[in-house]
Image (cartoon, rainbow over all chains, first blue to last red; front, side, top):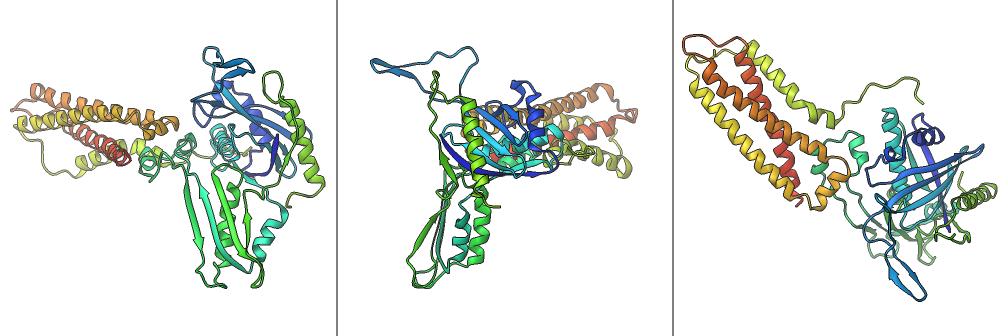
Length: 288
Length: 153
């Protein structure tokens, strides 16, 4: 299981443990604040130091089948009103907000979890000041290395622009404004590339690049930012260096074997996430 | 948790939902307060024109509803549905159609209620004005949204 490092920033006065408790007080069918077929908080465990969460999302469209070594691939029969589901587990250190999140390719990602938590918080409290932001935590030296670059030749990034979500309506955006958006249904990808001219010492303005990167960093690890690279040199005589922000997110892999249902046991996942987060905090691997 | 509940925010969605009603009330108040022309003694032409105009609006709204249904398979419509906006759209069509219908019936009823020799009841002209203004504003609200949707199709 791959584990990624994030930090949860709280806006407003509603804390994440309080929000989780309030959501869990609602019936399962009422917890999908982003829309009927969207993700929800399945369960949480509020400990002394850590808050463990698990988010589930129905997997719609073409689903998996079952197969055996000498059994052809066939359907998995689902019960009435059931869908395939994908889940993402997460453990948050309550004191610092640092979090370890399971990477599930098909499951909820950081950006959608962030939207969910924010929408849930102002849906449950009617207070638009409440919300959360989840930003990836990069290796400590990444930002320093970019700052230290004397010549920045290129910044290249690719984003997927999400379409309208229930959070837009919950935030009070009008229907006219929603359909007036240039891409209300979202776009697959949008690639933007800033390049300095061809002269050897030509550079993009460092302040502009740093400002841009500050805007991009919250989206690293969220799934919305597909690619983000900075190309530059530390000084005039140095070789050109490429820093890939996506690859620089702090990550760790732990071996967990799937159980009989071909799923990773939730308690094992939470334990692995908590232990990894504890290790990162003890080693001061996460930026302060 | 916040110590006090904050006052509900005036969002663009709230404004969009209520502005036709508020605007129609304000315009009617202005008509009552400042309007100089009195209700015509022979009002058949006015009532006929207003009934006919509202019938045209209702006809267009019925066509627009069919256009919206034809868009139901598009990615944009599915996005709006997932985001929870399709209920708003249906409410906008319904309110525009219903108000147009009420205005049409009110105008037609005027043929039978109002007589040439007597002034209309004091409530009739302001109510006629309010319903006419409201049906126009509701019609404009929905069609402006529809044409923005069509740009994406």
